[in-house]
Image 1: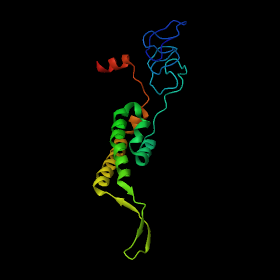
Image 2 (image 1 turned 45 degrees about the vertical axis):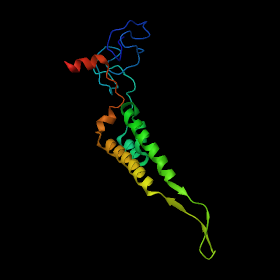
Image 3 (image 1 turned 120 degrees about the horizontal axis):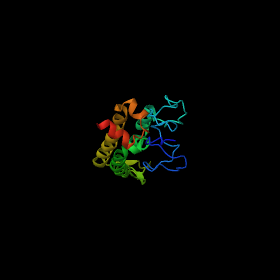
Image 4 (image 1 turned 135 degrees about the vertical axis):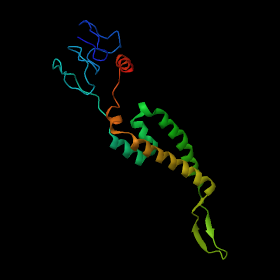
Length: 175
């Protein structure tokens, strides 16, 4: 038996790999039966034909673009592990701007009469443009940033989102 994540030969009684700390049936880089390196999305080992288990589920670029168009910076929750800082910047910038924008629309609910005393109805809303315009611009800037960021990422970025490259493979690539 081999560690699927690290590729090290294990004794049959081992419950957790002492090299990576993962339980033996889990992992995606090596065949558990023969120890040969396999592709992360492979379902069968090319060398021995053993079944490798379910590959990680990729993310969808279409879903990310739709989330960006309709929910602005909330699209980064979909890919939170790789876009944590973008989500928090979007939240910290947009939330106060949204609050300021909504406070800028001050309801004016008093009864209005003209100079002759005729009833004009309830007052509408007063808009304070010196507050609304900058707040709206900040909200739109974050929204456009989210759409552009998601749209410009290549499809492969989403397909390989759940791939976890173990340390031993990272070292091989550096040499």
